[in-house]
Image 1: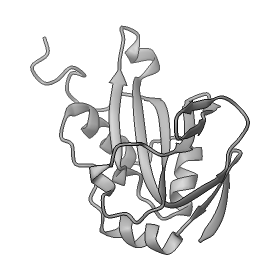
Image 2: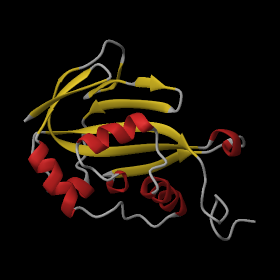
Image 3: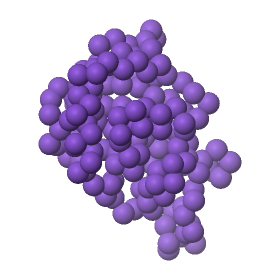
Image 4: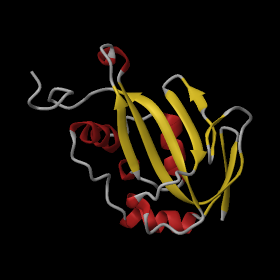
Length: 160
């Protein structure tokens, strides 16, 4: 296990397992427009540098997220982007967390950045994308606004 410090979090990660697991893992597989939009940005590494730095330190391609969800967009989405929740599951344990209000049960506090936030914790539901990952494990979760880059309407190809 290797110890990492990320924005007030302390965690131990099984680097050998994470490298081998993500080397054989598929890219995020949903084909909806919002997920394809994330994949286009991830493949071109157009995600925040602080997030890419963590993923790079573990040899995780950003497009191999274990959970992707566009949470919502409102009338000002063109200016601020679409709000996404993104996760990557890691084999290991969270040892310490920064001060602040936890995001919920099994989650530490969100560390805020101009582009969104990062937190460590664990989803109660099993993540089908990471079902073969050994336990213990935890999730790196990010909530951020991402631009729409696909050459189709944000509400789908049949949107008027």
